[in-house]
Image 1 (cartoon, rainbow, N blue to C red):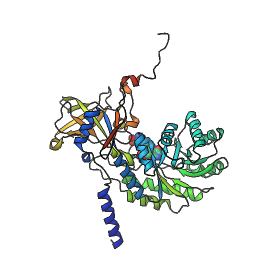
Image 2 (image 1 turned 30 degrees about the vertical axis):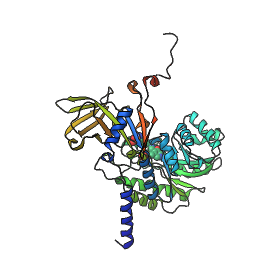
Image 3 (image 1 turned 120 degrees about the horizontal axis):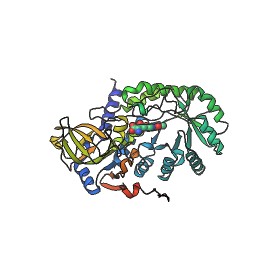
Image 4 (image 1 turned 180 degrees about the vertical axis):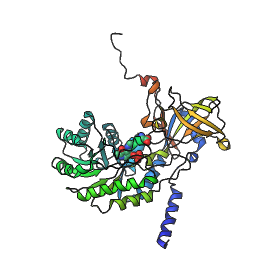
Length: 427
Ligand code: LLP
């Protein structure tokens, strides 16, 4: 390696020491988490805003000339949005609700993109209204129908066209969007549609997203998607302000999975894109928030069976849907488990009447009723996908930031679950 390479390596190592590329579950402060569980009850989501900030800084440093737009669907807690806004990030919103919340959290219109996926009428109505108040925001359309429906509403503002690049990637087939006909206009129609759209709208960009949770092994798909977007940008019949290649930057869920090599991803992205006269936009969701969050759950039941030790906790598929939905594996450990951690092979389950309601097998410290378990990487797609199935109120969320902490979402009660119910007058 030459001298410059050595220097670059040394500076990358010192940057890593200051802002490590991954925060493992074992790196959290058990005593502080146990204190939060005692004070606020369980199940409880804990989000560390400083980790969100650092994740954004590391990500933005790897993509110095790109605009980083946080995919808000990963976690819309207001302090998360406010933290990323203050860091200068943009935001990618998937619905009128997310759009409203992002603007309300302070994102200026020019850093806001709304990706309209088969948008319900009410979403388009609201998005067009919000765009009138914030004309710098951009609406991304992925179907000719959406273009027509925007035009019908008198929209003539900033528009980005979502393209189906024909390449998908991601941690599970249910999150691979790139080659799914639902998302984006067919690649071969894109140039014509851009020309047509330019007659009505201010066409500013093109967009594609391969899928979610892309690991270093999936880089070939990422490269291919980006290369197609580069070609499209060069051939586009209109001048584009940006080329958005989506999100999906993976995080390690297993304790021995390596972190994503961001520098390699950024290099591959630049190289595959080639020369374009437009800004690169990237949309990380989980990368910015996953390891900034843990879920705390208390043990209700310890049951020895011939097959396994069942450890029943008060969080389940209604609190964190990912294991049930994608067979996702989240690390689980006992707070204060210390050297006994790893002693008992246990099946950690929730309180929901479904066999899908499990966090899988984990080696825990001698499990006892009342123990608090921590579930890692719960900051992304955790609370966001929580439900009230089995009439279970959704949990509370606490944020921590240095030595401060605050409840930012109250725990729901059964009264919240039934709040919208109305009586019929014939029963
Ligand atoms: N951009 C677009 C247009 C997206 O649809 C998504 C995710 C992202 C960016 C961010 O992807 P990320 O960087 O977070 O991987 N609930 C699933 C993930 C579904 C994501 C859908 N779209 C999960 O828990 O894995």
